Image (cartoon, rainbow, N blue to C red; front, top):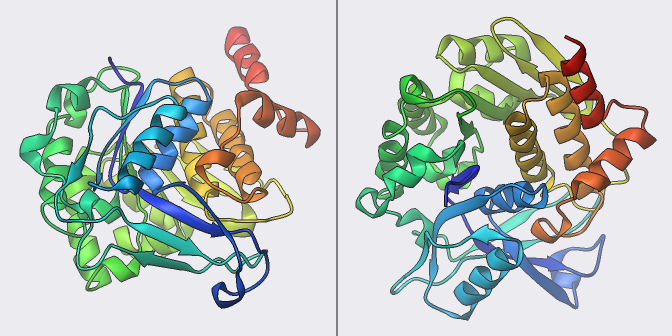
Length: 333
């Protein structure tokens, strides 16, 4: 199978409370869900009908089997998911205190986790080369052997070797608990950026990658590093995407926030769908923004990923242009 989107990196069981607005010490019941950003992005794109897969590792335990089952349920190829002997499948707990307080607690990730044990020699480089989009995250660079595996994967699909319609995306996903320092993270990001065509991050993540500055300055530095599309999330002001010839901003899509944690992954999967569809950048951004907003209004992450019909419905409701409008735009040019 040639994947339209192939991701690499983190997977876990998300343990989310059914009690909203209280600390974990007061929660009485929980639900479990597939989690881990690259895995969620693969799920999100699959919900838009894309052929997706994920390269990751689990523990050899019932939670690992659960994650396999969930990936298959969401039509994500799990052929590159295997267990690591002696390690447990990680679990991530979160308190749900909307609108802005969603503290995460990682279990089974220290000193290492199965998905940080992906080794370069285990990679199917042909699958990585042939994928229309290859997606990785900065978190995957925090530790060996995952760090070397990520570098080997990116070196296997250099920018100069990409065909039209192929993209290599780096999610600038910086999580300080996995790093000794920001400088260490910046040093590793610098090794990957030469292979990347799209970089996505918020202001803090962009600052770790290319230094402090305004969103435009950060985007310009990413472009100077060779990235073709720099996406900088602007928080309450929406999201900006910049190329060497274009700058577009998508205004926020207001919703009542229930859990903001999966919004970025929903954005990522929808963004990939828009790129693969060949839509104008402004339409890709609006569509991805709306997809992220939908997940922010729901409890879980993977299970909450919207369908194209749900995203289009929200765009229409908010008076935004839809993918059909994007097709019409292209036809009239």
